[in-house]
Structures are given as C-alpha cells and as structure tokens.
Image 1 (cartoon, rainbow, N blue to C red):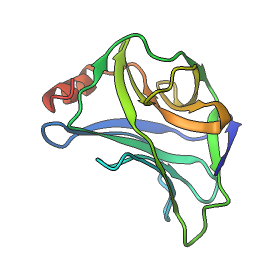
Image 2 (cartoon, rainbow, N blue to C red; image 1 turned 45 degrees about the horizontal axis):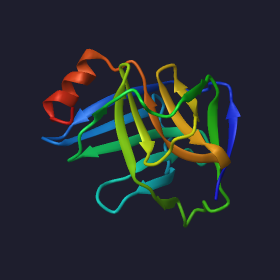
Image 3 (tube, rainbow, N blue to C red; image 1 turned 90 degrees about the vertical axis):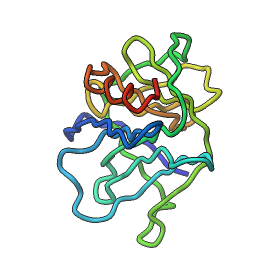
Length: 172
C-alpha cells in the first residue's frame, strides 16, 4: 500500500475545468512548476471511465496533480455529505510499490460527485464518516479517510467561469 506524510505548503497549484464535449469535463489541480520526468500515479478506476488520477513526483513524493473526469454523469446538488475537516498541511505520498518499472498503482472505487455550498466534492461512494481534507491550495484538497485511505477531492469556491463550463457540458 502507501504511506502519507503531512508537510507545510511547498508548491503552488492552479485549477482548471476543461470541457471536452457534452457530458465530459476534466477537473484538474496541477503544480505550476512541473516535474521534468515521469510521475508515479495512483489510479482509482471503476471500469467505466477514466480514473481519479493522483500524480506523485518521484523525487520528493509531492503531489504533481490530481485530476478527475466527469463522464456521462450528473453532479448531485445536496448538503448531506460527510463532514470534511480541512487542514492547511500538504501531503507527501510514499509507496514501496513504486519502482522505475512500476509507476502506476491501481485501485477499484466508485465515486459520487456533489455540489454543496459552492463546493464540488468528489467522494468515494458509501463514505459516511468524516474525512480529512489536505490542502493543495486554500481551495483544493485531497480527501483522506481512516487508515490513510484516499477517498476523493474537494474543490472549494467554484468560480462563475468554472460553473459555466459545468453547465455548458451539461453535468449540472
């Protein structure tokens, strides 16, 4: 499996919502300064669409980017989601499973996508307990449940332009 370590903020990230046609949008939070080489990847697949992808810099184990495809699904508008306890700390992600020959670790998970209080929450289906949100920026978080289990993303303070992209591709 893998281990998580919290650190104080080191990188700057930017967020992008890229509409790719009706019913398809890529949500991505990425480092402003990119790693020149390859990255390690944690892929969370469900067998139906591209995964939640967390790319990890193999040199310092920081998060290079986190991305999620919304594909042929609607964002649910609701307030009744798990409690999220937000932290200002960043994460480093280590795994003995990563090697020069094994740069991807894949897991099977289904996710639900919620819009609540101007926040977009991507959360593993069935998670009902509170989760911790570890900061990429003041508005973007990696969600972690007990046992260092990565369970999603929280994208806070959705802008008017981001909402426009979601409406144009008809996912909300």
